[in-house]
Image (tube, rainbow, N blue to C red; front, side):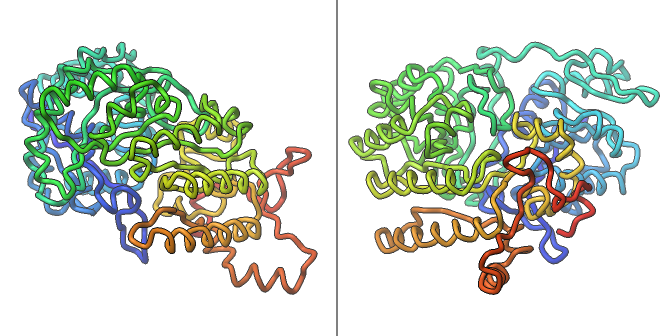
Length: 503
């Protein structure tokens, strides 16, 4: 059967035109999951095509209407960030094929299957891993079978939501035996690098994290992964940088395994340039940094907080001392300049004091060890324990992510970050001073990356804050979602859906 898979990019609306943002604006790497599902379907005998709208930088499917017309099943993957784009694609498909079955997959449909099936013109949602489910569903539709036996599938039966049982998760052996994505169709020079998976899931459950498969780590055997990495090298010349992005939640989750992978790469005479995430505690594991350094193109360390109380609240399993010792070790082995230490500003419990502690600690790491800093404000993304707590209080809901513009929405931002606009502007000025100093020290490279929150820029522009503060020096502009002393909601925060607020 002809199956058409569609991979929508993360986008936002700019003056009525949808444009890619974040990682999809720079096309870091292909969407591994969708390319993998295409390969799995082909291996099972189905005629599977992939429309990579990330490559196109668009939400429009006009150029692919012939494939839509021939498809017996359309599959669309989505995260919460790409869901507005996915919804645009759904409506376009429905305009030309009202009857074709549409199946959704990815973390956003997994979390909100009932809401999406009841609200939008789609027939199915695959919850969790899709490799087995997409094949079983395609087989059932092709042969007129019963979808009640398709694992992980959600669907509507006479107005009632049906959730088929979830199958056991794929084992490391099954993950390693899956076909490799076919990257031969990539347009040369479009993506920075390729994507590959060496493990699935994470052993931890950080409170802010919305990653799939938390507390569910499964690592491929080192030699099996290196076999796949070696096969993938045939396509690296199609990329801009030659990087290979290991998309694991944490590549170094099992540092002994990571060392074995590096040793196997070295024995085979391979010279990949790898991009990956690594935990600070793993960087201190004997032999890990020494082994992986020569194959490291760039890597991310999720530092998150610059004070130990915050790290404990997050559940990160690290301390500021560990973070600093990890940075020192990177200097000793000559790869500190390839490390991005990322920090979150404005976590729900934080006052401006905690935010400044994080910034001061991050600045110390940069000044002392030369690591690059990513400073980003807390963003309300579904799936984390922090988000779910607010969902349970009806402060936020899944409906808020149906439309472009939620990145700029003031209510959504203020529901997570409880600093006042005045405090946020003060913080931004401090960080911009650090950015200026870093440019003087490293003029050839941006070493401190920071973005002022768009909702604050839109609704509390700096000039307004300055004029108000000057005219009423004793008045603080309050934008707290909750009173710090009582925990009660403040009257200045509207309890209304995001869609009804200006974007």
